[in-house]
Length: 326
Figure 1: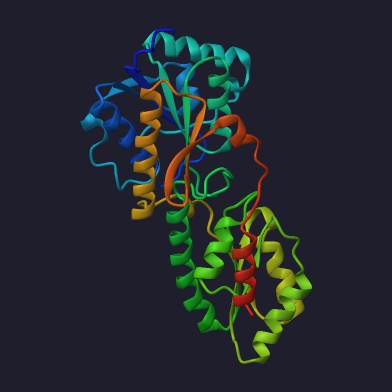
Figure 2: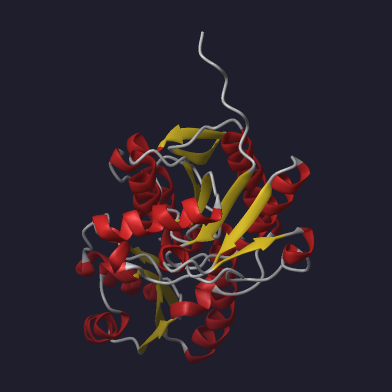
């Protein structure tokens, strides 16, 4: 039998891609779990860009004090086109070796996981933690930041509805989701929307307008339509709906408002559990994994298998949103 590998002593953590509420809670969990287990932990600023340039500092328990309820990421994030090249990857591996870092936790979305996979394929143990408001990482039931984003959008919907009702209008609210309708579906149900348009399902404008007219005929004087950004532009849809229904229509694009704010309790707890699990994996020299949540249990999946999973959306919830929007 071969000799057992010693447990890791030095690990790094970075955030990459779009920021999401709860990322700081994940960073905090990684740092404090590592310290609790007698490991040294290094924070890498500006994602893979910072990794290639050695923008790295050792962190201690105080480094992550008072960050639990802050939105965004204290480690910052940046695009890193150079990291997609072999030269960039090798540069990053050299930096990791110079700092003596033996394993890495990458918090982010699909693009971040591809970077983590590229390092793992070259023999460097890397763990991915899903942090994205879009909830579009198929291997996990929920991603860090999604719950907060939904509640942020819901708060905006409730405020907009007051004005919409006062002026007897239709209002189209454009939410984030270039390829995913997860935020749109959840907020349509929770916000009592009268219509929903998402990238996964072809939109039938005539049917949507018919529903608005039928609602008006029943005495409904205002309507809220939730539009995922990947399914069209709110400003363009505004003109079409107003012309076909005869109802005054306005568009509201929420934009980056959805990324900000303090994370919800659900996101803080999820991020903390995932950060803890990631460190446990690296402590035991396990890499090439993605931390996931299934049936409220934290587990992990092979990163290559996770990236190869075909995208899907919750048809049951979408059907519920459509039924309740009549």
